[in-house]
Length: 320
Image 1 (cartoon, helix red, strand yellow):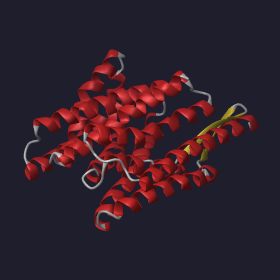
Image 2: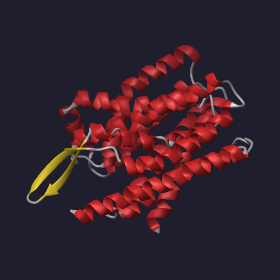
Image 3: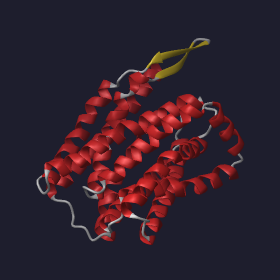
Image 4: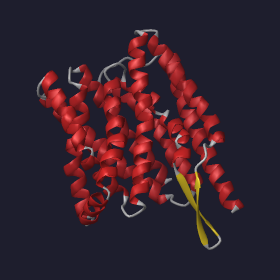
């Protein structure tokens, strides 16, 4: 029960990303600054955490060993993830971005053949190429249906051009995030913990964020004090609080795939928290009944996907 509560709390703090990004857009802030400022603020916060744990030296040694891979996959996993996410916030409400973002579960499943999975066979370790989990993918159709319902409702009130400017960047982000993070996990090979890896990827992605901020400076000038404060809150709530809580929740149920699936399913609550946040903080109207139906389908699809995934893992373990 404690792991579930931690997972719910992490979803609550993750939702601030969608609400605050939308707030910055509504206040006239450039998405270029919204994207880059988050990572600028994350560096000192994460350095403090990793330094407190005494792990800075090993992180820098690891980054020096494979600097090109760090730069490449950090750009993919963080740059091509968060920049499109902030861009999409200019064309849709936070709850719509949060709901559509859940397609990352499907994107992550489709990327499985690009990676190898290791397992113990007798006294030797065997590496096999991953396979697309078709059973879990079938459950993901419910998520896609929910996203389609929400986007259809959204498209009825705006142009299809603006709808595509929400959907296409989020599709790019949904593939980039798991691809970059999984590639970096392969590069690190368990030599670094999650906090070190996130800090290393944040540092390695800074050249990209510097370029983005320079473009923002030339196109819209310096950010307002409000946007700076809100970006700092996103870095704190999402980059630190939410991540630490989620890692703590998964650590509590490590080795129990059924409970791990339940913890991962709590992240579907980001959609509901984003709705509540926009209504309370931004005085936005409640989504229509059709959009609420789409949200319910997304949440149900995530729960079923997590259940099927954890059940498959348990069956494979028993078979072994």
